[in-house]
Length: 205
Image 1 (cartoon, helix red, strand yellow):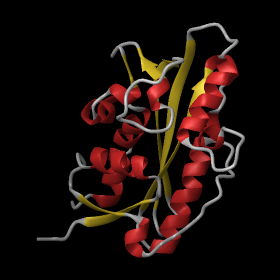
Image 2 (tube, helix red, strand yellow):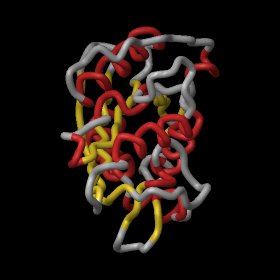
Image 3 (tube, helix red, strand yellow):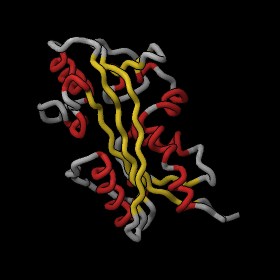
Image 4 (cartoon, one colour):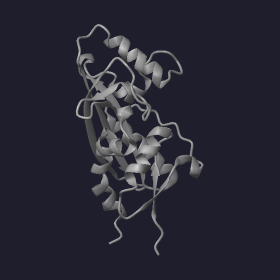
């Protein structure tokens, strides 16, 4: 039997890594997903792009070049309408204090929204980049609409998930099961949109 093709998941974020692994488990033919630390790779890739797609590409290309494997990276953010799309590209480093945690970023966001009328409409956006060692680059994108609420609910997520309310589910992103989230989240949509791209690279035909 031919061994499974290897794909490097270009992230060190543990929550993101788990989501990507679970979503890509549906891809056929099966892929052997590798993580940077498993290959002895420890990269810090500055996110200097001007879009999610550019940041994802920077990471994917750097990891593909270092590993010699196809590398998949994503960049995502929360965009709040009344804040003109903030925190956006700076979602992961939104709070001003050094070493800020996810909880710090949620508190800072809610403080900035405190004097704004509700509902605080928002969306999660995710861009995926698939880079090949020869420099080729493929892209996909996904979005998930919702709104921000002032109280945290749920523990099945990370980042802004506990305050991201999804009216159609009457729940926050952090209250959804992993199976639900991996069906409808912005990252799930972007990764599923990448399946045809993966098929181009990994088809055994």
